Structures are given as structure tokens and as C-alpha cells.
View 1 (cartoon, rainbow, N blue to C red):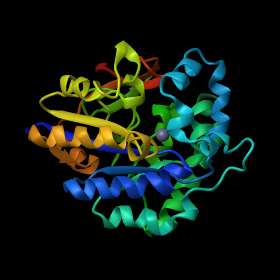
View 2 (cartoon, rainbow, N blue to C red; view 1 turned 90 degrees about the vertical axis):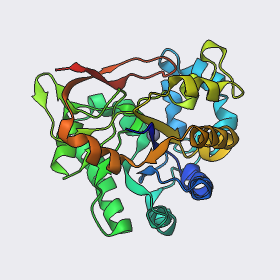
View 3 (tube, rainbow, N blue to C red; view 1 turned 60 degrees about the vertical axis):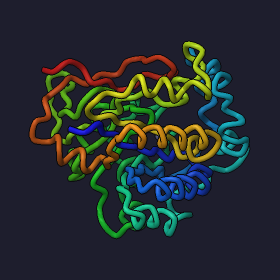
View 4 (cartoon, rainbow, N blue to C red; view 1 turned 135 degrees about the horizontal axis):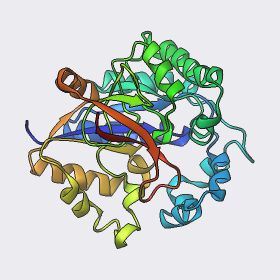
Length: 298
Ligand SMILES: [Zn+2]
């Protein structure tokens, strides 16, 4: 297999949708790269993420990544001092233009902050409603059901995986890990293929081990594997304040003859041989909240 990279683009916010998506579409078109976009479709409650200040590591991460300048002040106030704008219904033509540009499109969530912070405490009905509202807006925009989803903040529960299994999805990208797999939690196997993110995100790397914007792409080159790599970027970061560094990374990957694939293409290539693996929530470097991590092969 050629060295391969799949770009998974999480769109978390209203501003990331409005400004980050068009910027990323321009960059990707310029390089002839197709990627996989996951949309947040409900209210942008980003301001409420300030609740995470009570989690160890959140404040230091906010300061380390200069979140106020990266995300912009409005985003940090949505859902608190400013009303939460509903994202999906505001940009149907823009979302369709992503698919028309040849990219894969899928569901990130209805309410990103609510899912990320409270999924483990949701009754099953709430988990269902969050996914169902996103599913409904997605179908309204694209005229056909989503084939893929990716959980906010790599946050899953047995309920979320069960509901995703019932949605007829081809594949999900909810976890961190090394290779595509079928997840097992507490002995229970789920039937939707998981394609994990294999690389740390830029906001996780920045500030860790003295990594800066000047050295971060060298770090990525060291972390890349010869086979499949899945890199999650954020429309509000790489499509905005971190765009220059991201464009440099794309140039480096092209120079090194990396093949770019969508997650749908990865699913087609890996499904038949994908193993069953444990999936559990745990902490990783650079992230304040636990994430779903692929365990050893069952
Ligand atoms: Zn997200």
C-alpha cells in the first residue's frame, strides 16, 4: 500500500462552517485533494465549553493553544452571552457545495458541546435524539441518508454505538487508534466499521514538548506511518488561524508522494480484513477530556 493519508475534517462551530469550510474547499481544490467532512448541524453552544474549566488540563490547554485568538470571541460566547445559532439550517448550499466538490460528507453531531460534555450521563433516549436530529437535518440538506458519522471529541458510549449501528452507516470515525476495526465494549461487538484517527491533532501537539507552529510539521513527518494515516483537522482552526501551517503540511505530504483517500475509500479497502478490537475511554496527552481509544486486538 502506498503511504496514505485520509483527512478527517471536523466542523464544530457556526464560524467554522461559515468561514472555515470555504477556506478549506479552496485549499483542497488547489491541491486536488478529496477529504471527509463531518458537520455539526444543531446549535453552536461553544461558549458553554467554559464549564470544562473544572476539568484538569482544560484551562492550560485553552491558554496553550491561545483559544480566544484561535476561535474568535464570538464563538466563545455562543450559548452564553450570545444566543446559540443553529448551524445546519443556515448553510444548506454551502454544505452541498462540499459534496459537489467531490468530498465525502457525514454527521458530526447535533449539539457538539452537549454531546462532548454529557454523553456518558445521557439516557439512551437523549443520545438517540441528538443523533436523530442531526440525521434529519443531514437528509434535508443532502436528500439522502448519511453513510458515516464521527463523534464529537471522540466521545462514545455503548448507546451511541448501538444507535449508529441502527442508522445503516457504512463506517464511523469515533476513536483514536492505529487501524480500522470493529469495536467491542464489555464483550459486546458493534457492527459499524470504525476508522480511527491515528495522528494527534494540531491543538494537542502545540505546546507539548515545546512544539511550536514552526516545528509542528516536522513532528507530523516523524509520526506518519508507511501505511494508513488518518489526520483530524478542524474547520475553525486549520481552515482559519492555522491555515498557513496546514497548507505547508499538505505540500510536504505531496512532496513525499502520499496518497490522499476519503474515509469511504479507506472503509472499502480495509473492511474485509478489519479485526475486532476493544474500545474504551481514556485520557491522552494534550486533551482535557477522555477519548475513545482502540485497544489491543481481541
Ligand atoms: Zn468536533
